[in-house]
Image (tube, rainbow, N blue to C red):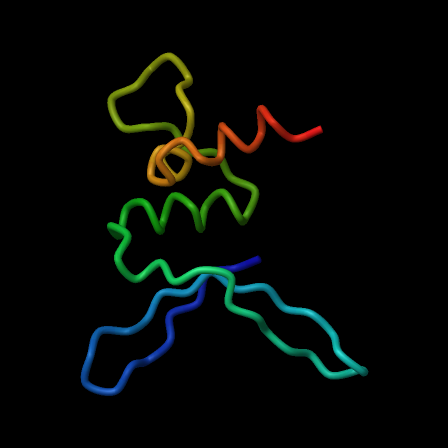
Length: 84
């Protein structure tokens, strides 16, 4: 998965969460989510996480959940708890 900025004519670029896959030998990409409405620092935090980095919430020194997980309204933590 990766984040891509797609030009959008006279509007701001669309920020998309995408994945690439092969279909019959051709490389294609699929959009998973539109992140255009997310704040820039949250998008950059998610981009860092996707590259294997670590992100901590600003001002939190106890190792709290990452900024991207908080942006999802706790859905990432909820899904991780109920995954079996």
